[in-house]
Length: 454
Image (cartoon, rainbow, N blue to C red):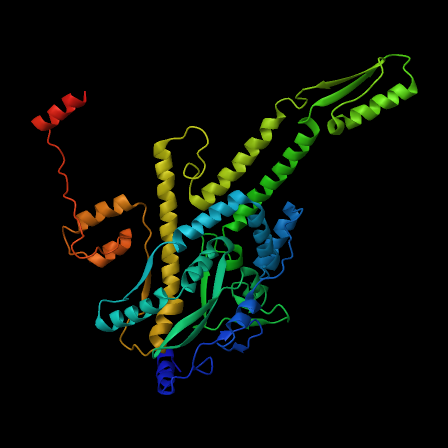
């Protein structure tokens, strides 16, 4: 039975307004055991998908350990790799900030559901879905979770559909962590299945019930081996090694050196007292010794210029991560003198990356939500609604663009108010500003004003 035929059968069985009963008649939310979950128990649903433990494989991480996690993921068992990524992100503030920026700069933008085609059925379908999703507070969290596929390689969301005002719409989004997924075996490592943590079995992701984003790159790897964290993790590991080495160096050479002197013939008691004083000077701050002994604290850099090596190594690692995640370094780290033109190029690169990530989310929306919404509700002649995420660089640039476009076509006032966050004024309270024309060369008034300013 096709999706369209199934949707017609569904609508004929909904004369009483009850929820759909089976996965083929209606999409339901499944728990980790593959059992349908009643909509009357949303709290239990959330708890079944919550992560309460982690294997923490990143502690004392070595290159051999990291490569072993990579090999397991390449064979379709990514649990330790994803747990390792989680630990690395959690313990690296700079890396976490860059990842958060990448997610929030896309998922935090305004969005709207638009018609897939310029005809009446498509407009009716998109308006209906947009109205319901705009009031669905979980949808932005859904977008943020799907955006994590850029870093982990996959992001999957379990969706519950139900009847609202005679329409079948998504009413609940549950976002399991990437560690919950695996493949049936090495020969099928490109497949994504839900792993049951309590049993040695996998659950297939039924179309219509799951939204799935994968990060595709030029390497052509399976989705578990394609996320940007595969490259970030190595440099983040080098950063941790560098910080450990820096800490050891500081412990050994960063503190003042305490030296004790005793004269020939000093008694054993004087020598022992001097030794105890040298050991305790950092804690006590004073020492009482005989005239035959002497305690000297010397401020000395016994390591020479070695202390500058660690900050340089740390900077190199962070720059490599910044290039990967943001497209540059001058738009994230501006220590020292930088080039304005280079920073502009890096910012443009970052903007292009965000547009690409937004486009991937929009295509996923059409495939996993839009076309199923059309099928479930019997919009026979409608194109699937599409998602539009409004990625813009700055308000001034967008205002200048609208000024040019407005000379060719009519613009919607409500859309422009939404774009700039402007409320509709009360009657009689609205104001407009007259556009100031640019001054003409040789204008007497301009020359006079310039003279007065001088």
